Length: 639
Image (spheres, rainbow, N blue to C red):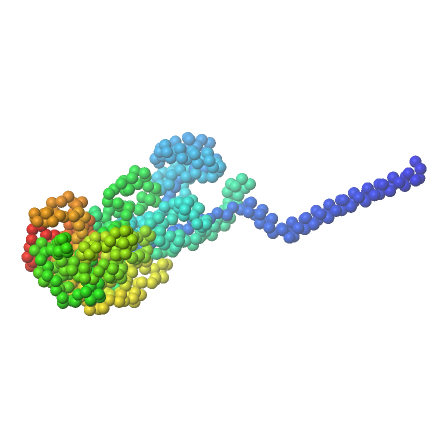
């Protein structure tokens, strides 16, 4: 090979070597740059990712806050929930393990099908819930037989407990698993076993009671199996909420009432509701373990609607308990003076229509005080006609009727107070006869027992108190617990005094329609107003034949109402009672209000001892003081 050829080949080799070296150098440089990038600039990020693959962080549901009554009694709390779990990889035969377990604790075919479905759907190391809400005995039997139950373990969680059961169900409410619509971005709501408020105080204060989640860190392998627990940080438990209800009083009230009865007792000075009971009710504890379809059908098909709180959602015409509002509206409009008199012959003629007084023989000449005392319909027919429906409606709303009361119970109904414009908007005229009928609380009115108690409290104190339940959250008092939090209602004191005197006469003066509500002298003095509301019209012909309402089927009889406050000279508590188809306020509602108000005044009197349990009647209660009164004429119904 010539020297020239050899130099050529050497040059080619050198160039190739240089190119190869440059390529290797460039690659090494790239690898060095990449290593520098990964280790120095992004090293922390990848270390974190590696740690996240090794460590699994999970949320822990916090304990739900408690609900307490005004005396600190627990009325909604958390109880232990023992549950049996199955880890499929720890047993060779799931079916055999379940068969053995079924001889220790009851397992239905539906339970087995559900468990086998969960085992197939999940990884074999993930626990499946076999049964919740184990009793102590069932949990103990499982633990004792653990060697014969491979894969079965007992875990403990919490469940909501309502120790006062149906006595406070409508007020406290209940909890249930969150629905899809409840998920608002809070990861806490996605945790297994979490519960949210579905009604009552539980729903209104749900976020306060819910608390915040804790975290636990596990070391896991490549497929996610837990190896060990590394760290645990408990979350913040929910805050406790104290409400104004007195649980013992509530239980006492429910022990006195029958189906179809609603009672609200308020502190007239500040609006705190101390008792709120309607019958029938339900046991909210059943929701914790899951309501059966049979139980749900029983509740929803019951005509007495046990799931509905009738104190806030039952709508009734107020009847004669509304007459104080008509009187105040007439006085403010100067349609009548306190001493002006109206003659009652037992009926009131307007054109060719005759409106009857409850007393077919009439009350003669009566003034405002006498009209209230005797519940004279003719008197209030006349002053309503002079005043007009719009002024009456405006006065009603100032006393909490037909307006939002904003109590801490979701779904509370505002009721309805009609106006002339409302009727016109329906394409119908408002007639003078409509005004006359509404003068005695009949017609289109739809009011709740809560709003009637609010009316009584405002009449008693002259303050625009709002009914409320919350006293404190985590021990911090809320607005409304003192009287000064509520403004004066803006009614002249002389007018309010006249209404109170009329209500006093109803109960304490001879001939008053509410004598059955009179308190024993040792208890105090109560002022109130009776009412009855027709649910079926009685014709003129029936009245003239001496028709007796007691002969009608119960569902056709009038509702009985009574509103009151006590003590008269220093009003502290207001009450409303509605007895569906109770016939008359004087016969059904007033005696019940007397018993409950006696209980209230005795219970909350400084240094008082708890009153006797419902049904334990004292000698005085068995033989109440009698007031002399002429017997009502045949066919008449006391208002």
